[in-house]
Length: 145
Length: 236
Image (cartoon, rainbow over all chains, first blue to last red; front, side, top):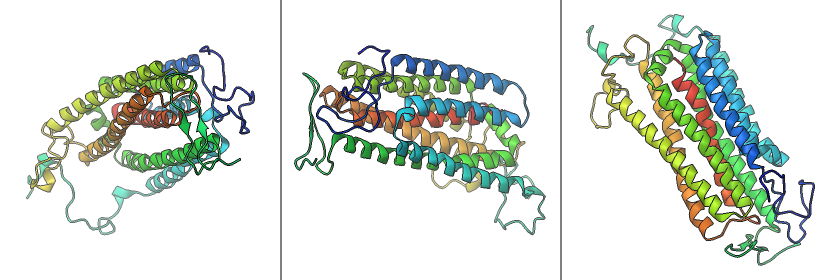
């Protein structure tokens, strides 16, 4: 087997790669990714890491965090699709794993929309939840007692 | 087609062991898919576990951007960048290790797994050095019991004195990189197990499920670090 051919290692009888019958010699649908694909993904990931660092040196204001997360998402997609073989996995496995990101986005959307629509620090102090003691930096503790 | 005594998957050649399918599975494919589905469910819970921490990060970052700006400047982005590169390389070697198992190349699989362990070990060494440096600067909780609560974050050099709730950044930093580091250590143990059992010839083209699953776990560790790196090291 060479490094460049797409093969289904354990299922020489089935050229389709989908769900298999259970003939003798067939031990599951297995996709063997060419080594060159992995190498290309690695190079892309390293390039994107350099871009992430470079982009953080430029001041885009509040957009910096967004840009960093966008590049990280591209990197994550490459790792999930190729390194984790999700591209060639079954539909149910794709749904199970990728749905976790859907549920996570619900958490992010509601948390951040709550945060964005409340003026936390401008609240009158009597409305704020009572706390026994506000946290203070150690260098300032006791300086005004 | 049922196999009351367990379907036996033959070894592909000398130096490899046959695999007996657990008796409650009809076929090797069914066993493989059931295990994969279970593992993807586990990985989904891992995403949600770290996701809660990421939500906390974004909430406090939006609330106190200046704190994260100053906090991020305390971390060494070069060390973080080296660790990112090392972890990406180890993810590549792990993918190659799984591939070697799929193609019944025993020695090659062990070689790639050792490279992955080397990457994980370098990562942890750098991470421990970073934690140590920050801790000795008072940017962390004391391990000695009985200290005053307000001293859990000493900030010896007063680097966070001018921003609100400076301890928040480091609380998130230690929790998230700590939980991630724990996953790296667990992953290293799993890869050692793969190398040992792989040496006995358990994993080959007809049966490589454990190698595949350990590989997925290692890639998840890489996946989380891809987000941690810009959020902590590049946020200044």
